[in-house]
Length: 127
Image (tube, rainbow, N blue to C red; front, top):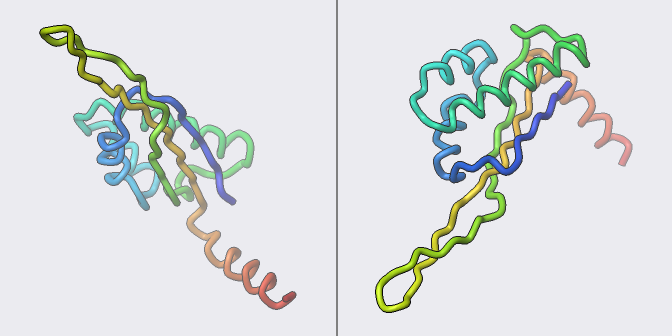
């Protein structure tokens, strides 16, 4: 069972959010929460809120247990850029790109790996 949570249009550059995402990739939920609590980056708080949202969704909607969950996949994509201009001398203007991020977090159960192999092998045998 995979649980997907998304955060769109976060006003932090994707390069900076990827640094935080790399810290928690393939970790279990408790360890990821501890890492994010002590990470001194601006992107750590929104990623922690997204993780808590995904865990709450897994507990309430799918009746899964938190110790069985781990971060299966986390991706950070670029969102729309806010284009601004910075005035310079002699009437010139330099562009400023205020970048945004889209974060996708997928949680999975630890013991669901065997089920996936069985499902994939069944699909291959039908062909």
